[in-house]
Picture 1 (cartoon, rainbow, N blue to C red):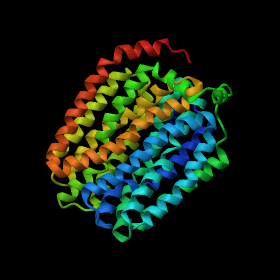
Picture 2 (cartoon, rainbow, N blue to C red; picture 1 turned 135 degrees about the horizontal axis):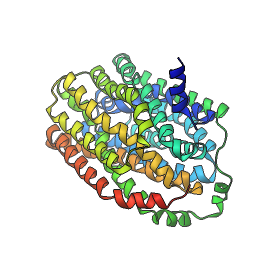
Picture 3 (spheres, rainbow, N blue to C red; picture 1 turned 120 degrees about the vertical axis):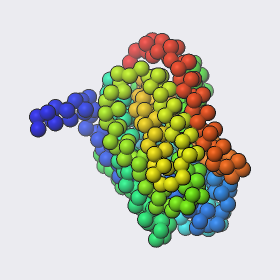
Length: 405
């Protein structure tokens, strides 16, 4: 028992109590992440929309997310972290329900775009809160534990969502909205403002001046650019993977089981990886992550039944764990206190943009050239990204060594 207590204390050292309210809110919210993983199937099977148009509509979520990351990061620095989070978590449920009830394609498309904006605008604020309250030495663990909470919830969400979808897809939208609203109540009650006092002076600095400072940080911009390509690959697990599985005669519940492999592995491995990742060379670790993503998605071209699809998911999940343990802490370490929200937003915008490009590009390749061409392209792109990480490792280490917390 004493060994367990010592181990737990080592895992949580330098992480303040307030952080755990974010952790619990994230867990609750992700337990209800029903809609987005099943949105392509919902649009094609329930609304009779073609694969290419459905992929385009899902991509609109990415446009909203892309804009939300930049706007949310700027607002988190100017208005504070708490107002941005509350706006996101209380407005999102409304548009989640509207999307579930919508029938006309223009209304579906518009609701998806707005949902993408409000459901993602809180993320830079969350990343900034962690940077505000957690010292640099513990940030890899803190971001890793949040990611663990995401997947602890998501380990059960796809299975439950798959069963609910077989009854009525509307339940997915209602359940997702409810858990988001609960997260908002938790922030309202237990998460105070954390923006540093000197960061409050940012309102007197023009946005152009802040962006000028960002442009002087090439490591941030290059790292963000590579994250875009990682995100394009990763998005295929939500958009074209279920379509490929459906083409092999598998059901939405089967896709839910395959997706749960991703979440279960993250739950089992994230704590260990997050604890160890602070000691690993950053960019070689990112290169390994890119290779694992390349191999995992590339192997999908050979998958033909549920076990082989689950194996492909397991491989690229290992890369996903590495990415999410290392990348956010690196961005936080690069960020001046007055720009933490903006830096998080710029990095997060790559994921939002990948949510736009990934579904549209993946759906087009899948429909026009077939699944084999899509998964081969994912493999090639992942290898290129891995080589790029290795190439920027030395200048990145030099830049990080120049930064004083």
